[in-house]
Length: 591
Ligand SMILES: Cc1cc2nc3c(=O)[nH]c(=O)nc-3n(C[C@H](O)[C@H](O)[C@H](O)COP(=O)(O)OP(=O)(O)OC[C@H]3O[C@@H](n4cnc5c(N)ncnc54)[C@H](O)[C@@H]3O)c2cc1C
Image (cartoon, rainbow, N blue to C red):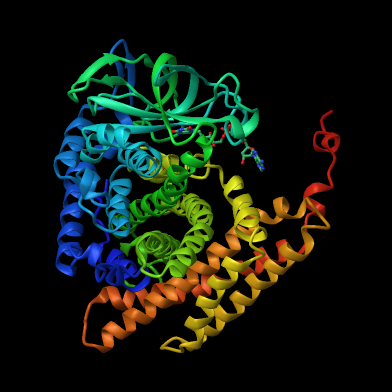
C-alpha cells in the first residue's frame, strides 16, 4: 500500500497562481500568512498527513466501528491521530483569534484540509464537520453561545456534527419532523435523525450537534424549521462538563465505504437545545455550514482522487511485465500507452479540480476581506456560482479517477489487499451527501444561473476570455478554450431562452450543464497554471514538476476537454427524450 505524500508543489501553484493567496497575504488582516509561514505550515501538515494520519486509513477501513453501551467505538489508532491533530492546532488555522483561532486565510486551511482527506477520508470527516459547525456558529450564534462553544470546537477539544436528515427528509428538508419545545430560556429537542456523520465517538470529550427541528406552531415546510445547538454533555457555568443530554446513537450504518466514519441514527429525547439564529430561519443558518461543507466535499473528491492516483502510479511502476513497445527488456506496466492514458486522466482531472476548488475558496476569503464592497459582492457571487460545480464535478470525476485506479491494478485492484478498492468504495458517497449531485446541478441552473439571468456566469466566462486574450505560451490551447467558452454560452442561452416555455428543461439539462461548466473551467485553470509554470521556467526555475504541469495540461486539452462537445449536444437536445417516457412505459417490458 502506497504512502500518501501531499502534492505540496501543486498545492502552492494553485494557491499562489490561481487562488490569489499572495494577494490575500498582502492584506493587513493576513499579515502573518507570509510565504515562509505558508511553506512551514504546508510542510508540517504534509508530514503529519504522511506519518500520522495516512497510516490509519487501511487499519480504519478493516477494523470498522462498534456500538456498545458506551457509544461508538472507533479504531484505536484514530485516537492518537486525532490528539496530534488537535494538539498541533490544525483545526484552528482559519478561525478568529478572539476564540483561539490563528487568523489565517480560509484558503490556506483548505489545502491543509485536503491533506487530511487524502490521508484518511473517513477520519477526516470529523475535522471537516467540526469546522463547518464553527463557521455556522461564528455567523449565526449569540455571543453567549459563541463564548461557550467556539473556543473548544476551534481547539479540537470538542467536535461538531450536522443533523439535518430524517427518514422522510433528505433532499426534501421541508419534511423535517424533529420537535422543539420552549422551556424557559432554552428548548427541548425530541426526535430521530438518520445518517449523522460522526454522530457519536470518543475522540473528543463533548460533541456539539447542530440540529434542525420545528416548533409545534411553526409554519409548514422549510419556513418552519429552526436550528438548535444540542451538546452531548451540558456545559456548567464554570465551563466544566455537566449532565449527559440524551443524544443517543441508536445504531450505526453498515456502508459501502468510509467504514471508519460512524454514520449514526441519532435519538434526541427531551434534550436541551439552544436556538441558533432566528426562529424559523434554521435552514438559512444551516446553509452557511452547508455551502462551505459543499466546497469541502468537492475537496474530498480532489483528495481521494489524489490518493488513488499516487497508489496507481506506485503500482504501475512496480508491476513488471514483458517488454513494452519500444523496449527490449521487461519493465513496468507504466510504459504501456493505455496505462499512461489512465494515469494522465487521473492526474489531469485531479489537478484541474484542485485548482478550481482552491479558486472558489479564494473567492470566499475575498468576499469577506476585500476592501471594496462591490468587489466583495462580486467574489461572493463567484463563489456561489462555483460551489455546486466544485461539489458536483469534482465528486463525479472522483468516481472515474478512483475506478481507473482500480483498473490500473488489474485483478489486484478488485481484491482488497492493495487498497485501491478502498478508495473506489470511499469515493462513492461523495456525489450523495451534502446535497446529491442532482441537487447541486439544479442549484447551478436555478438559483445560480436562471435567477440572476446568467450574470455571475457571464462574469466568469469573461475571466476565461481574458486569459485567452492575454496570449501566452500556449496559443493553440487558448484557441481551444475560446471555442469551449462559446459552447458554455450556447448552453446558457438554451437554458435562459427555453426554461419559461419548457419548465422541464432546467431539471433535464442540469447535470450536463454542471459537467460542461466543470470540464471547461478545469481546462481554464490548467491553462493558467501551465502558463505560470512556463514563466517560472523562463525565470530559471528548473523543476521537472513545471514541465510535467505543461504536459498534463496538453493532455487535458486533447483527451478531456473535448467532452464539452458531447455535453453541449445533449443540452441542445432539450428535455424531450428525458421526460417523454410515461411511468407505465418504464416497466412495460416485464409487466
Ligand atoms: C454516509 C452518509 C453520511 C451522511 N452524513 C450526513 C450528516 O452528517 N448529516 C445529515 O444531515 N445528513 C447526512 N447524510 C444524508 C445525506 O445528506 C442524504 O442522504 C442526501 O442528502 C440525500 O437524501 P436522501 O438520502 O433522502 O435521498 P433522496 O432525497 O430520497 O434522493 C434520492 C434520489 O432522488 C434525487 N432527487 C431527490 N429530490 C430531487 C429533486 N427535487 N430533483 C431532482 N432529483 C431529486 C436525488 O438526487 C437522488 O438521486 C449522510 C448520508 C450518508 C449516506
